[in-house]
Length: 139
Image 1 (spheres, helix red, strand yellow):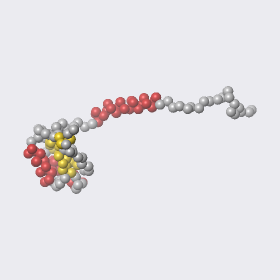
Image 2 (cartoon, helix red, strand yellow):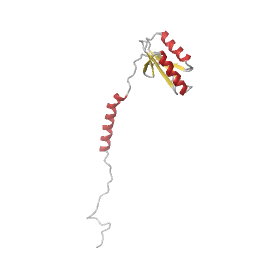
Image 3 (cartoon, one colour):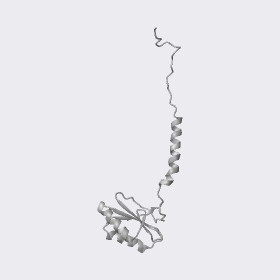
Image 4 (spheres, helix red, strand yellow):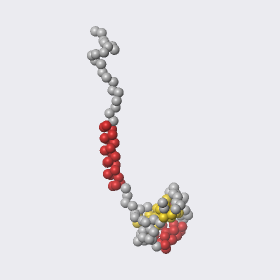
């Protein structure tokens, strides 16, 4: 038996010259919807603070301690409500891990000035020499 090589007609198969991307797009869109729906459950709740505004603002990098002072006078350290003693303890632990740690103090615009100064004094007393006051840049 001889084989028909290259002869047109029987046994010819066409090459697949195109790729159907519709299933890939469908899967991508379904994953996008899933991520969008679940993202609201993943994100932590933010502490609502009305920051004062400034025209020239910068960003800090490195190991930071995030202190938030609400208008009611509640102090949060890295999102957890803390007393002065707890703040001191956490700051000591952070400085033991990283001597170059810095603090960012975010105080509500309606917070008492004396409470903000108390937080700054607390940070300096524990050895944090580099700190910043968080502001919102004006547009």
